[in-house]
Length: 224
Image (cartoon, rainbow, N blue to C red; front, side):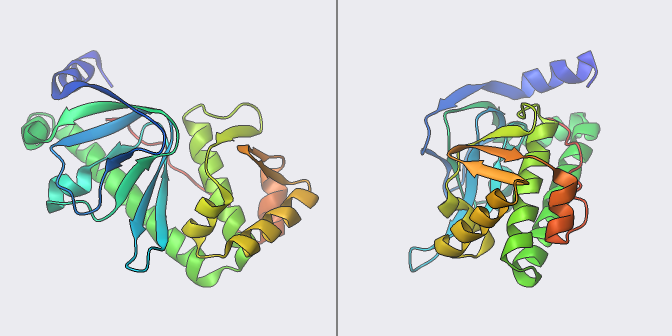
């Protein structure tokens, strides 16, 4: 971004907010007056079903823009919750369209982000519908790891991983037992290790070959 673009975005920004771990940021069905960019911390997007079960839609990382759905469609169709302590950049939704009319290049960035999200959901649906458990888990963990690498959250082959195995199971439509057994197989292969609080990808190429999946491509996202 140019200095002028940074200055314009700063005018759109109304402040910053600190959120404690396990705190909802946006609730399903709510109409929030605010939009957020994640400055630090990690979270989850999920939907609750009538029987109390949960479908995790995506994992939230720094740089992600959240709240767009409520701004465009009137209410959130899913909940966003902090998995760790988080710091958010806050924007006033009432200034949303004024900002983009004055700065159409930022509106294009927003369209690009929405297109990337649509592409991700298509890949996720393919993984859930057509892949067995092992390639399904490998695809998910490699995607998270590549996203973390792009925002400098990795240290060598490792990244912080605050989510539980149950969260991974809820994202991939697997039972906790099946998820645990599959992760144990990956750990024994010495290609990937998921331990409490940390994900380590020892050999991404060999991991992809073992799982029989194509290269995971995660585009660099513009930051709003």
